[in-house]
Length: 346
Image 1: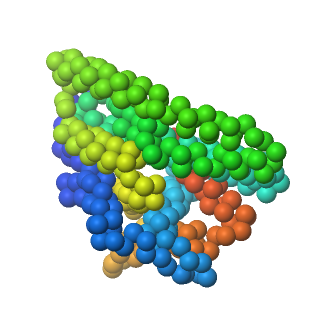
Image 2 (image 1 turned 90 degrees about the vertical axis):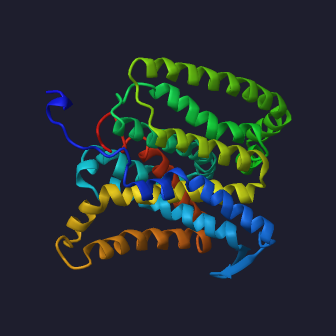
Image 3 (image 1 turned 120 degrees about the horizontal axis):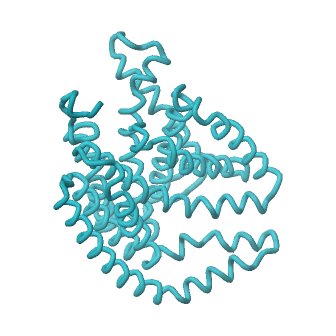
């Protein structure tokens, strides 16, 4: 039976106009402003001593916020019975196996530490891609139409400035860690990559411009065939492009990390809460009770915040840091298959 036989109102927003604009679409611009204020106020060098460790205040805050959002995924993977029963081995056996492997082998521990950086870049790109696909679906478009075009644009706008900008060196900074286990190849690759970055930059500038023209022309054809352009998706990509090019391309890594990781985390929390609120209230037997949403939100945020603070200020041993790396890797991996627009999981 077609959707037309069951007419109903479908909002063009994921959550609501205010929440979407404030916490999703304009989140990159918000933290771009935050980063600028910190920089121009002269407070970028502010340090904090918490848990017996002195470190950059804003970098520590960004790390805590980032790791807090990392933990949030488990409310969907392990807290949602419908999702959990789809992939029980991935949610139980894989984490145990990877953790044991990291404890048993320093080389594997380093491998995970290096790989999650690339996973983070891919994951962050795909989060924008996913939001865009949801806006397409809310606008009444086929989930398959323009999918590959958007995936390419999401990667170009997020990963492109990293490869072409000053942040590339920091994204490759863990490769020399392999020297601890007698492997020099990764360090040599880092030197090679940085030496040839100018060529990569020009390739991305020219190729990116060409792809953008191709992208616009392809969507112009789709519009003529009936595609509805969701303005929310257009704004989402434009704001991301501005923030990504500016921060990854020109800012210091610390400021770029604060801006890009923080807005990404800010976008994630409302999505998880919006999708898992009813399930969480049901699991906690709070449905119908006074202040149910408030108590449920506290139950959602508190463990996320606790994990974030612990990760940023107290996780200092190899085992503790390994747990953080493992949680990051699982978050990036899980998000790739638990939010499918095509399978109507969002």
